[in-house]
Image (cartoon, rainbow, N blue to C red; front, side, top):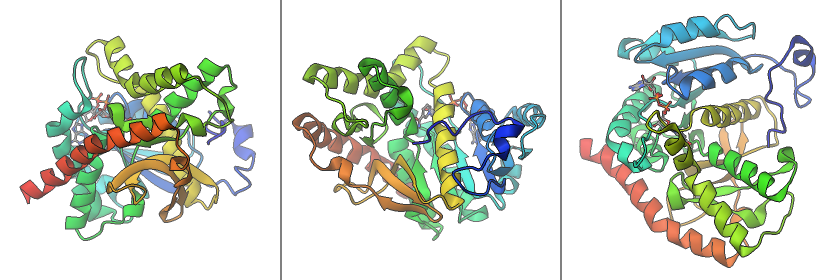
Length: 342
Ligand code: NAI
């Protein structure tokens, strides 16, 4: 886990060594959809990273002001704005990590799958540009439905002949962040210590917190397991309903995405001890994509961690079997979308 390393750094803390490594701002990050509800706070948090030298903000609207505003923060990275299709290619040149929160969010009564038609096209277009302009970059997909948009991205990259499954990530960090928060609250644990692996996918019942593998080791009653699981699965809907039409999670999502970006950058920078949950190409189950803990390294996913799926409780085993058909359908829908258009 990140153990609180992601914090506003004053000059003094900037001088401190970072995980024993030399702290040097040298990575280029592009955020596509940077002017949106997630994009803006995410851009701010990435602007605070001591590892970032260049921050490229791309959106089809309103991004000039966001970049001008952020560029006044006295942190190392240079901020540049890129607007509209004509500037998309330039926003991606030389970039190490591309984060994609572009697209429409849910409104009350909508499932993530209801966003499919609009967001599938947006993700396809953006990933094509990534393939053409920074084919070696790590790609973080936030746009929903993640269970389908990640397979869409993979198919696009395959068509372009540059697919590297180790570098394509569906961002599910928010599920882990939520699980950690809710478990710590319920069990009166110190938040910084709690780590719950969340596997499967990123929608409804496909989100499966493996509570039996919570660290530190903690016991739950059957009722607690059921309540916590359902709350973690529906936490996004909690926010959608509270916002009552104004969108879905943006601030907690930006926090989670920034944590994932920072973890990726630490791995790129040579930290050999970086683990995060993510929805990736996987052979852990018979599904082609599956979220689990992965070890991150310089080349992307260094290992998919299988231990969280071993010795599951009966509840977890049943939930795992129950999520597979839905996740399979969402993956196939994404793959089919790209092939239909080809
Ligand atoms: P928003 O509507 O506030 O912002 C979306 C931004 O994308 C806007 O600035 C818009 O101009 C931009 N955009 C639209 N088409 C674009 C294109 N072709 N190229 C570049 N930018 C484009 O939406 P919000 O709340 O920021 O959500 C964004 C996405 O993130 C949604 O699909 C939402 O479902 C998803 N999401 C994912 C979560 C996850 O855990 N992975 C959690 C919460 C939301």
